[in-house]
Amino acid sequence: MTKTKWRFEPKEGSFIEVFKYHDLLSQLVSRDLKLKYRRSFLGYLWSILNPLLVMIVMTIVFSTMFGRNLPNFPIYLLCGRIIFEFINTSTGKALGSITDNAVLLKKTYVSKFMFPLAKITSSMIDFVFSMGALVLVMTFLSIIRGECLFSFYNLLFPIVVIQVYVFSLGLGFLLAELHVFFRDIRYIYNAITVAWLYLSAIFYDASMLKAVPWVQFIVEHLNPAYIYIKQFRDIIWMGRNGLEVIYNTRIFAQNFLVGIAYALAMLAIGVFFFRRKQDKFILYI
Image (tube, rainbow, N blue to C red; front, side, top):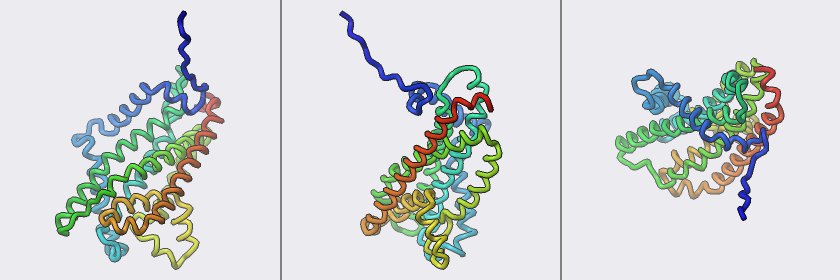
């Protein structure tokens, strides 16, 4: 007597259906990474060199204005820069992921969630490479200052990366869905990210905004990007001194819980609206 083998079959159109197409997902991620550095002499090294060069320029420009009271300002700056760049780049790519794959979607059925997911995932891999620039800067400053700026607490960085990835995933789904029906969202989002950049305290200390309390409140409590940047800095920039991290454990825990809440809420919103409208995509792409 043969036994019936039960296998879970996700509902068509659901988010978890994307795991049925994991082979195609890995191919899409690989394609994105290869296309980004196609015909580039240095290839993946640009993931390290690009944030490094930008950091050098921004350090020269902003260190005299904002970095006087911030020790190891290049590390402070780079921590904020690479987190925000990941959010900005990954969601920007996810925005056009459905319309860019219109030909494939018209030919065969695949989970539409796959395309924004592939863009966000490839950007995360690129982000991990870009952390090489952070390691180089910390090593260089450790040598010239004669003190080790690395700490055991630095190994906690995946806690922040996961939060940022989930948040970007939700925002990417939402933007991809909106772009199908409203193509101008690309230009609106570009304008929003410029304002978002300056409200994320990347090259200045948020405490400098205390003269304008309502702006400081928005930056510190209503800006998810700053919440993740703050956590990342606590682990990397302040992580050089274990006592400082322990002293700020309560604040770090608060930021962690708020960051998790923002990430899960954004994912729920993105999945909800994407799933609700995905059957109509074919009519507009």
